[in-house]
Amino acid sequence: MRNRFSYEGKRCLVVGCYSGMGEATARVVRSLGGRVVAADVKRPTTFEHESFHELDLRDTRAIEPMVAAVAKDGPIDRLFYCAGLPGTKPKVDVMLVNFIGLRHAVETCAPHMPRDGAIATVSSAGGMGYLGAMANILPLLATATPEEARKWVEEHQQQPWLDGYAYSKMCTIVYTLRRGPVLTRDTGVRLNCISPGPTDTPMMPAFVEQTSQAFMDAYPKPVGRNSTPEEQAWPLAFLNSDAASYVSGENVYTDGGGAGGLMTGVLTVDLSGVQNAAKLVPE
Image (cartoon, rainbow, N blue to C red; front, side):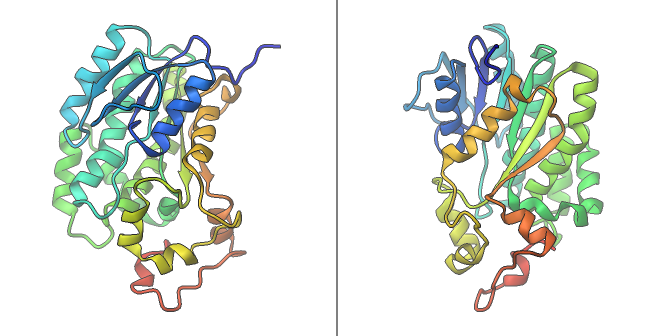
């Protein structure tokens, strides 16, 4: 029986691979036999890659020429979009990297992918409140270009619901749920995302700064600890493998059960003593 988890012969573009989940994903893909094309603001040094493309996702105009250069050298069998900024950065930059650039990378790569291609991106358990925010999410999703999306964000960035990080992750989830089925129907390319909980990446200090150590300690972790980057990389690798050939348009919570527990009420967060607690937990 063929090993459907194998990446042998697959050329994989990993966006946001210098550190954190993206770096771990690239190493996992290499261990499974895949070829890695790297794209980030810095060249990675911890894994073998066939080429590197310097990419600052705050400039969405750089995405199309990057994808064209990658496609010129061979097929793009898989896309992993792991780039992200924390909520301590300017709102517009956060939205450009976490959602607007993500969407543009997906839409730009898809035409260069085979019918059995697959795309996996990173959202967050922090976006679990998306069902209650649809009225504020769908208008942004209705924009047709990165330029229109940026203009929309700039015009609405003072709204209390546009906090930057959580909103960007809600947009990613809703985009995946809506776009995945249509993309697969029309092109055969699958689209999924994961929603990690607290993960020990270089961004963790920024999350502590944004929320507080007290909040991070109070956030439910049924496993009893934060995730490692590798524990997020393996679900991403599964979603983009042939083993997940019937999975598309899905948001997979990879947070050790925290989101499920919170959404169903079997877990709670003790926010006593946590400053600005009401702003930190999705309804």
